Structure formats: structure tokens, C-alpha cells
Length: 396
Image (cartoon, rainbow, N blue to C red):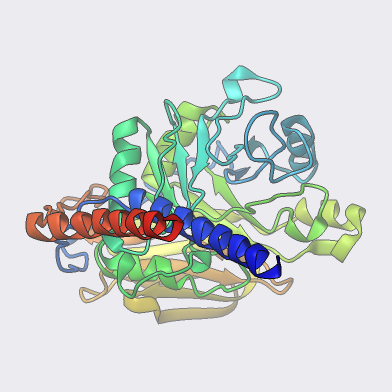
């Protein structure tokens, strides 16, 4: 009897493992691409993402990646959108986008404030994309997207499904990131350069250093709006005339925004958290005059640094609210980072060299390697056939 029970349990485990392997193989289908070699930005002109900056608009504090409770779908938050919206507004946010997994969420108050977006991906490795301006949700996903070609294929599928902007969410928390992934993958305009307390923004610099022009959009990725530690920690400040999507879209594409990382003010004292969030430092001037770049804050920072290729620091000012930097011919891009005494950090988007002064964002060609594609997908089919065959043999 014990032996029979053990046999049944063993077979059940084998079947479960077989189902998992089959699901991974069937959802692993993808072309295999030939990616172009990295090519740093070059040209005599400089793209200024803040060329449309208008002080009269001010900066609208925003979060575009946060979760809520939903009636249908995956619940990763105990609170409905109206509660999450109220909690963010209390902390000074004017724009709140709800990015629930594979579900479009209706704005709880005003249709004019609706942002059709969702977080795509339910795979094992947490390879997630923020899909903004989506027409509908793409249900397909690779369960184990290890290959760089799989990552590119999914971005291509999302673009074909219909959307305005794709963001590469939290690459620093995506498991199995192969070396050089962000020197190859294109088709996304935004990247969450920081989703933890690491302020180096390594993955963003990797993309920029490869000539892939993307903007840094950091977000709370909040799953509980009553949790002080995870609220108002990472946000974006958009220079838009309105909080409506048409203006948000242009701002995100141009790069006319900056991002901010803040500590958990008050460490649980809600009143202190509100007060401190109302007086975070702000950018009061940013732009370019020919090859001279500048950034200015309303109050002094401990230090302001200019960063270029591979994250190299090329200029610095201390105990100052201003940094001017003449962009050298061998500097493909420059971005600013400012560190403030209360541990607030502000990041500008990147000024980049180009030939015509226009936005250097491009969707690089990645032709399909037909022999490798056939071989790879035949391998997946062979795995499925082998698993089915072994299960048939086992039950015989």
C-alpha cells in the first residue's frame, strides 16, 4: 500500500513537472535576431530634451507605475483606485497612472485624466513592460524569457498590438538579464533606471552608451498605498500644461521631465511625510545653449554631477544650486544627477549628440536569423514531443 501510494505521488510530481516544462517550451516560441553592434551617439549637434521647457507650466509630480485592487484579474494591492489616488494626491501628486498587470484600469474620477496603460508580463523572471497608450491588452507572454531575442520579440508584439510608448520596467530586478541585453534591445522609449535604493542607474547608462536613446522614468511600483516605506519614494516631474494624456504623451516622448528618488520621510509619521514631500527641491532651470548645458535648482545641493559614457563623471559642483558643463566632442551624452542633504536625488534626462538636433530615438533593425530561428523552435517542439512521449511510456 505504501509503495503504491509513493508511486502515485511520484507520477503526480512527474506530470506536474512535465506540464511546467511543456508550458515553458510552448510559450518560448520566438524569432532569433541578428542584433546590430552598439554605436555611441555622434554628431555636431545636441538634442535637448528640455527645449520645450516652460516655467509657466511648472512641474507636475507623477507616478505612472502603481497598482490597485481590481475586481477582475490579479490583485497585488488591497485598495481600489480611488483610495490609491487619494493617497497620492495627499502627497502632492497631480498625475497618477494605474498600471495593473495585464489589465486596463479606469480612472475613478475624471475620464479626462484617464491613461490607458498596464504592466505586461507574468513570467518567472519578472521581465515586465509598462505599456502606455494601449488599445488593448496582449495576453501572451513567455514564461521563461531568457534570450535577448525573446525580450525584443515581446516588445515588437506589444508595439504591433497598438500603444504609444513602451517602458522597460525595473531591469535591476529582472532575473536572468544577460550581459549586454540593453546594448541590443530597442523599441522602448523609457526605462525604470532605478527601482530600489541603488542610485547608479547602471542599466540606463548601458543603453545610452550603446546609442539607444531612452528616458529615465522611475516609479514607486507601489502595491500598498498605506505603506509609508513604499509611497512617494520614486517619482517623475513632468513639464506639461495639463495633466491630460495628450500632453503627458508628448512630455514623455520628448523627455521634458526629471525624476526624483526620496527617502521615507518621517519613517511612518504620516504628517511629517506629507510636510516633507511638499518641500522637496525643484528644478528651476535646465537646458542647452549650443554646447553649454546647465541645470539649476531652487536650493543648493550637496553635489551636482554631469555623467557621460558608461556612467563616467565628467564635471561636478559642490554646495551649489547650479552646474554648467561644456559638452566635449568625445562625450556622446550628458545627464545630470544632484544629491541633496535629506538624501533626495534628482536625475535629468540625457542630452545626446546627433546630426540634426532632433530626438535621436531610433528603432534599430534586427533582421531574423532564419536558420537559428528554425533550429531554436524545432528544439522547443522536440522538448514537448519528448515530454509527452515519456509520460505515455510512464503510464503504460
